[in-house]
Length: 333
Image 1 (tube, rainbow, N blue to C red):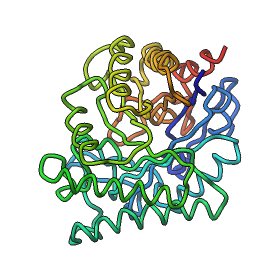
Image 2 (cartoon, helix red, strand yellow):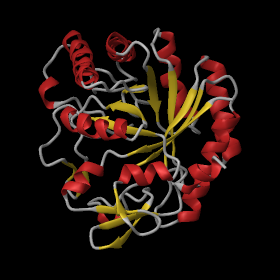
Image 3 (cartoon, helix red, strand yellow):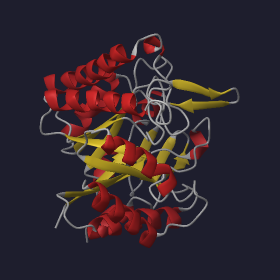
Image 4 (tube, rainbow, N blue to C red):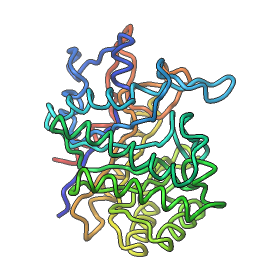
């Protein structure tokens, strides 16, 4: 049976700690959030890294919408990665190749890269990836997985790496990241991450172009968010899609982001339990992984009120997990 990875993305934690937030365990005792997560069955942590993000770690996404980024520059990732290692947990590093969140709607070039040629950008991708990973390995930290790009259905580093206008260059960027990972951490698995796992129209065009252009990857990672699709969790549909992708493209699959409304504990628990069940049933994989995106926060404290966390306020600047992550522990018997 495949090794099961029960993951949590905790990129906001250090910024929340700097803002004075603390976490309580199930008994109401204040403790380190990584220890609390581990007791719930979490055995892996995902950390994102941005290229020279704003010093205040907030991104003005729209005129009236500000997003908290987390402390996600290279040094901050190293600091958090040391805590992950201290707790004996596995590590995934997620490169966005932007100064802020990258997703299917936003794949902005870092400010310092905007006037580079395509060839120079390939070197930027290689150099940035190599630099961050060498920083980690110098401190004895070797990630198990590295994402080269985040939710790159429509490409990355626009306009230079946009899928519909520059698919060949897009793949060259991604392969530069892959090569950098393998140079520094040969045993690390590279993940190619797409959003909307259950929507063929959003995934197939990228995957077909990527493999037609000899794209390099070890694992296909997907986001699964029923909330954004305005539907309930559907594990049969999820299983059908994941099995189809792994059979078509001959690569292992992983759910690298999922989550439900923090105001709906039962619904969030069900989404996570469905993901675990589906991943456990997929054959031919060395590892089966699920990562909950930012469970340690709650919409109540975020400037954009992002709703798909898994914590609740338990007092002034005091947070506590809701039921959702118990699906990890429950699935382990």
